[in-house]
Length: 419
Image (cartoon, rainbow, N blue to C red; front, side, top):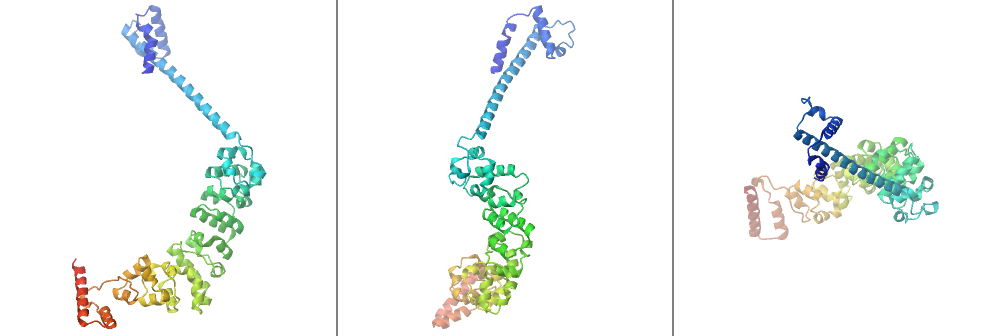
C-alpha cells in the first residue's frame, strides 16, 4: 500500500492534465526503453493512441519504477546490517579480551569459568595447547569449549592424532564420534586404558576396543583386566570366541551381567574349560565359575545342585530363566541349600515366577517354604489329594476337617474351569 501511494504521488502531475506533444514523445521514449511500447503499438502505426492507453501505460511504469527503487533501498539497508553483524561476530571471535592463556595457567580449574568458548578460542595459542594438552584435557570444560580444543587439534594434526597425543586427551575424547575414533592408531595397552576411562558411551567403547584389537592382537588376560566385564559385553560374539580359556583363567573375575544371553553362553563355555582342573573341588570350581554362571545350562546347574553349592539368590537371579524352568523342585532345593527361603522372600521376581508357573502346584508346595502358585491339574478325575493328606497326618486333624477342606478345593477347581 505504501508503494502504491508513492506511485500515485509520482504520477499526480501527469494525471492532472492532458499530455502535450512533447510529453507524448517522452513517454513513448520510456516505453521503448522498458520494452513495453512494441506490445502497445503493435497495431497502431499512426501512433495516435488515446488518453486512456497513455494513462494506463504511464501508471504501470511509475508503479514499476517506484517499487524497484524501494526494494533496492531496503535491500541495501538489509545487506549493510548483515555485513555489520558479521563483522561484529568476526571481531568478537578473534579478539582476546580475557588475556592470553600461558603455560602456568593451563592447570587452573577455573579456566572453564574464566574463558567461555569464544575466549578460549581466541586466547589459547596452538603452542600452549600442544605443550599442555594433558592439563587442559583434565579440566571440566563444557561441550562447546571441548569442541574448540578438538577443532584446534584438528588444525595442528592434519594427518590424524598421534598415539602420544591420544593418551593426553582426557575429557576431550568425549566430543569425538565413533567414526573419528575408528581412524586412530591405538596399539599400546596404556593408551587403551586411558581412552576407555573417558569413553562417552557404549558405541564409542566398542569402537575403541575393536580399534585396539585390529592393531595389537587378541583378548589376553591384561586386555581383559583393562576392558572389564561391561565393556567386554559391547563386543561381538565373534570377538568373544577368540578368548582363550588360559587367558580367562589368568584374568580378574569379569562382571558379565549386562551381556546378552548368547554372549553369556559363550563366556561360560570358555570358563568351564578354563577351570576344569578345579572340578574335583566343588566349592573352588563353583566360586571360580560363579561370575559366568549366567550362561549355564540346566545340565550344568544340576551338577552344581548335586554338589550342594548353596547358591545365593543374587547369583540365582542372574541365571538363564528357560534353563531354570527345566530344574525339578529337588534340584532347586539342592542348588540353593540354606538359601532356599530366599525364593519366598523374592517370590515376585521374574525368575521365581517363571519357575513356579512351569511346575505343578504339588511341586511348588513340596519346597515347603510357603511359595504359592503352580500349574493346576488338567482334569478333576486325576486331582491329587496328597497335599491334604500330608496336612492331615502332620496336624492330626479330624476326618471331618479333611473332608471339608477337600470339598472346598474341589469346588474351587470346578469354578475355575466353569468360569
